[in-house]
Image (cartoon, rainbow, N blue to C red; front, side, top):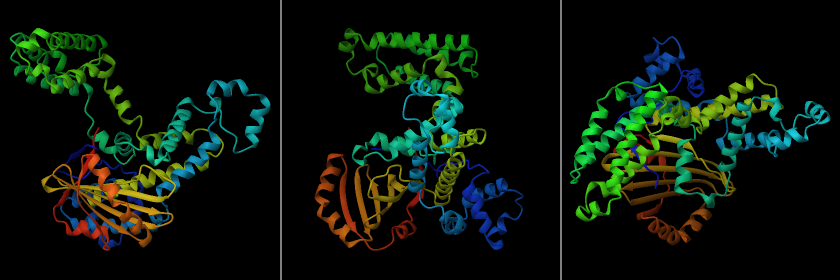
Amino acid sequence: MIQLKSQSNKTLNLILSNTNKALREVLKDIAPKDLATLKQSKDLGSVLDSLLKNSETNKTQNQELIQLLKNNPTLKQLGNVTTTLKDLQTTLQKLLPQQTKNEVAKQESLESKQMQKETISTPIQTQEVKKSLLQNLEKIQKVLTETFENIKTITDKTVKNKIENSGVFFESKLKNFTTPQKDLKTLIQEFSTLLQNSKLPSAKSIVSETNGLLTSKLFKTELQDPKQLTALTQKIETLLAKSSKHMESNFDKVQHPKDILFSKEFKELHTKISLLNKPEKLLESTKLKELISDDFKHIVKETTKELQNTNIPQKDTLIKHLDKLNLQIDYYQLLSHLSNASCLYLPYSFDALEDGSITIKSAKNGKFFCDIELTLKEYGNLKLRLGMFEKNQLNINIECESQELENILKENLQELRENLYNAGIQPQSIRFIQSDIQQHYQQDKEIELGFEVKA
């Protein structure tokens, strides 16, 4: 199952920038009375700041802004994300070479270069663009290929990865960013705490050394000097080696078989520290690069910037598709904030799907709700509300535009139940309803907290 982390404050904790194009479009159409509380604002940044502060207490304003967002002419004309992704994929397939870079370099000739200038659909070559731009274009192409892969190959892990890197959570990742040295210190503190519960006499000396390290100058400031980073990792490596000696000792296991050193929790913590305990891994720049390297919004923004300063076939078409995609991601980010939920486009596509989106909310008492809205090519709209409670109890409400589709789903309910049971989920009820799913959100007063997907 996808692991979700509840939040008690606002939705995704988004730091929406003052260049949020979706918000800019909405503000164009807001009537003067709707901007009464924002009249002191002098620019989009301050307007945004006022909006976010007011939305904490003014739920009515939130609903009004959501309607403005959904009814905005410019945003309504954007179409769906699936279409944008397919248009972008088609353009990239024409531009990016199918051969490896080495093969391209070998096959190039003066004649083919001349043809490239004359033929707009000829693939771009490595020499014509910056290496970083080509890499970004290839990353986008890879994401798109995975987006339109066979839905039968979907796994929990790939769905989680797609959602996290869809672009909607980009600002949230940056806000929640912690330096790797802080992460390491937290892990070492947990390491010390667990060791204190060990019954092995020799564990006390490891605890003493660990606590001494935590209070040393190596953990007082963010280290940048390679020598200091190496010194820190070497000391930690010594502590890990000492604890490993006991973890692998048959004598200790016989004497204290239930000791904390032999627990799954301690082993997992030991592994986490080992993986992070490398000088290059402890640099802030390394973690930040890893954090955003696969994020779709980051890749789209970087690619758009680099395209401005290059001259390749269909440059304007590419920028148009990327700008449109960026605006659509902005739309879902803003909708997420105003509705106090996680709203995002469906990160997968299949032949029968025309468009799709997911909205996820958490509620009191550990309950979670997920609305899935699909537009199917043959059957029209299909809406599902999933309500999870007591960890594995599930209620499902289904609304079908097509009676034919409803009949098909009913015929296959037994298979659905069996698959849910096999996944460790207990379906308590599966109902077909006629009312709009969104009304259920408004009627359910328990729903009040947003949450974000966490790695």
